[in-house]
Image (cartoon, rainbow, N blue to C red):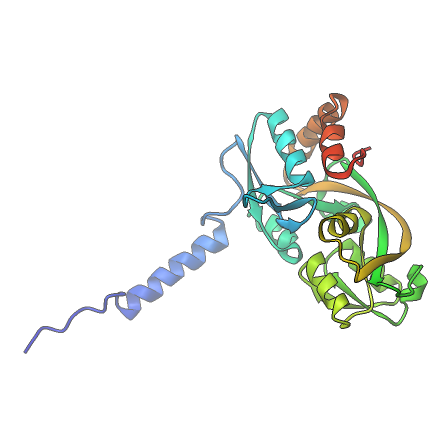
Length: 262
């Protein structure tokens, strides 16, 4: 009679012990993907799907306005930067759990975020717009009352839409919001004029159009944890230097044809 073979994936007890070790490692931040322990590297959370701020270039390389500004900031600080692509609706959870040190993804400055996170000085100023199917009629936020808007549920624009009385249909990002809008599943989406302009320029999509403006000017910043020490102070110093030497204006002009960093 042949000797019974050991299970190739180990005994149930060993598998349980291994799972327990993984759970402890994940809970204590020992697994790969946690904030950098290398003082010369900044780990930065970003979507990678939000053009023209953070997206995949033709060669598959992560690029965009936020990406280039963050790389320039890291250069001024004498550090390398490692981007961790993360969906927007879980990006702050990733920051809080120390998967990365900063968020670079058009984080709109508002009182709630100022209270919860350490925010840098703004590096983008923009306006909000309302997007509907072509020929739609939502010229002001008041026109959204009772409508359905597709929004990333944790975004600032989601709060603007909800505050106007629009029922929010949660989506993962702007492109998905446009798809739902074109399919007739929602009535509108509220977003940044720069993102909407980039989408229109790249796609030539005539099925949707800017029907109105929110009347709000927003400012975007990098976000860190409150316990990040000197990090935001250092980032602000780098932004000051990049503004003074013209680098921010140059990056902005590359993506928008104007200086949105003022």
